[in-house]
Length: 414
Image 1 (tube, helix red, strand yellow):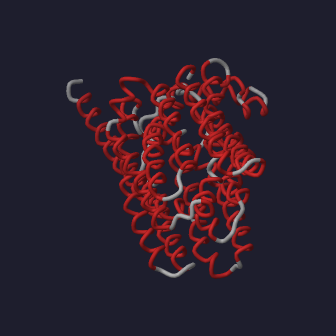
Image 2 (cartoon, rainbow, N blue to C red):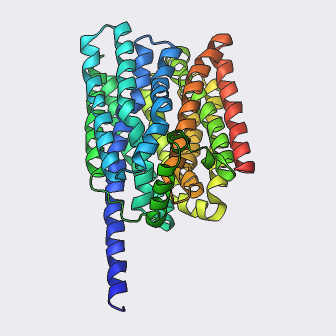
Image 3 (spheres, rainbow, N blue to C red):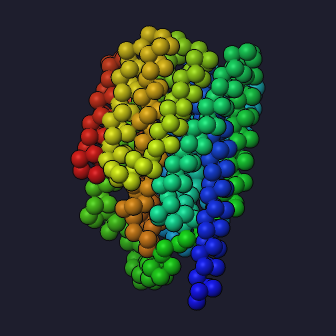
């Protein structure tokens, strides 16, 4: 026994180290995608004359697909290998980032926006399975005691690579002719997406907590009706239901502003791609600094308090942006945005996993994915409507107040 247990401990530690490295590399390359295509796609849409509603539907198309297939996907994956599902679904989704490279050279400006929306709609069919399966894979590949540490480092790695990529892309966009500059940026994003997907293949789900419970869950589902097994309304009982409601409120007010920000930056305060790249780099630099201390903060205050404070701080981004007339306040807004997202991005998934019991975790994650995308859809449509009913300046203040209120609610009741 004295020989076996140390050996098992060493194997577990080696497996954790193996998984951690590939989870970090996954996020490193995802940062390349974030700092290129994901950072500048909405800006590109604004520069070719897209409306706030069209820009909102870049996120809204994702939400529509997720709302249709989130629950069936979660039910299907509860009986499938999470690592294989995470890899294949990521591969099928991220190949579409490569298609964006050719959009500017083939279509006119109005046709480009339609094409971008079609690509986004299609790519989120496998993207739904990827979103659910990765959360489950993360839970199964990292022990609960290490998740805060791993998530914090992943957040920090994302910040570093996004900063570097955004600055490089800002230079490319400034000194290369339009639209070739954006095609190069989209190409960089596609390469990052491909490399990130490759590292997901090597992550091993070696720390499953639900082996004994999962079989019970599967047997229970097989005896229940198909509808009951699919919807799993029982997971909304108690604390998890309250947490889901609060998270829906946050995602709704979060995405109210997503379609407004690019239009306001490009058409109202007329900032350049270079200034946007600097602002985005500031955002992720501050996010990185917060990530360094995130594990200590969450251990001391817990996930719900940390998440609530982060959401409140996120509310200062649209408030300061609404007061800006040029680069200075835009940069300050990104300081608050990076600080807020440093708290939110590093805690929200652990906050959900903490509330989801080991047995049948996919059913719980499916409900979060459902309300997440409901918030995206309603926010993406609601933001442009608010802007049309008043103006973009007032809309930004509404978003700011909504985010602060959502953060306080989660801090007090989450």
